[in-house]
Length: 114
Length: 114
Image (cartoon, rainbow over all chains, first blue to last red; front, top):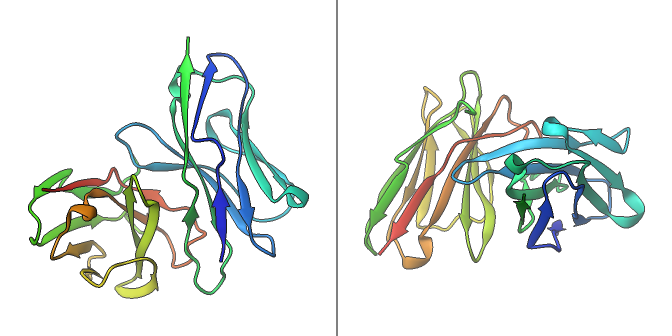
């Protein structure tokens, strides 16, 4: 069965510092990969997605992610975080084509300190 | 604002009761998805409807049911409620029936079962 792991439950970074959130997936073939953000009291918003092609994908709000097949990873990065980036971030995967449901990781809560 | 609306925003009820959660998708979107977010289970896909028909099923309990109406709004019915059903229930919509199309999430309905 497909699965996605976010090993970091909570990350704290200083405003202006760089950020990397980790995501590992488990599936034999290349899945469809997504990063969503959930701000407090809000629904989820898609940051970026990877289906195929260039392994470095750009998203909204200055985020990017890199697909690394050899490491089964799809880590999210941002060069300089802003206080408004404080939120919960979810990695998700679709890989069971024919029963295409989004499977979410457990999420990483990001706290920004001034 | 994603364009997906959910009502009510909060719902408090007792064990054994039945509730109905409502979702209106973005204009033009034909698919509606329901998700449950709880502390112990994380974010889980429940069910998808496309243009009035059930399209995919996830970890939805038999006590739960959903439907999508001709005007494309959807309702999630939860019956014989248990304490463990307390969660945030999200609705999402997408333009077509394939779940790897971008899903737009509503703000959620917070259900508390006492």
